[in-house]
Image (cartoon, rainbow, N blue to C red; front, side):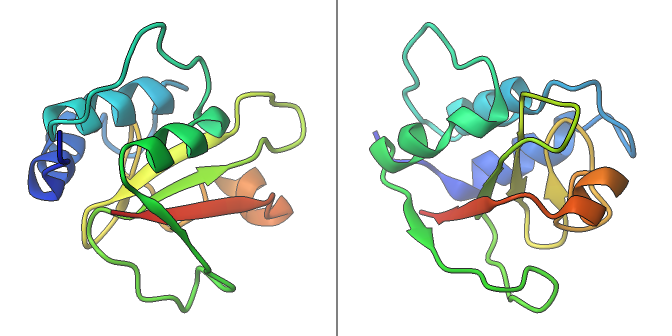
Amino acid sequence: MPVDISKFTKHLRAHALGRYGKGMCGQYVRKALQAGGAAIPQPYLATGKEYGPTLLRLGFHQITVDDPATYNFMSGDVMVMQPRKGSTAGHIAGFDGGNWISDFIQVDFWAGPQYRMEKPSYAVFRY
């Protein structure tokens, strides 16, 4: 079943917790993808860093983003980031055309100050 990017991004924004999340990025982005029509089988993935293969199965493809600060992202792009130091979960967020959103509305591509400082590896997927 195709993913309706408009429904995906509207769900992301409507359910975001504001400026701070609760460490539930994978769950929030998964639910937004499902709201857009994505069929994601159970058991659901436990962490954001695991979602790359699932996005590929859904019809997304990986794009090259050398510098997220200057790249022109498109609505519906999804980033999967490896963990920062002191974490094992990594991160996932979708771009709604104006903001990166996971379980919260991010200030930029990076999921917080430590991610911004460390800049762990990431992949970006486009439908």
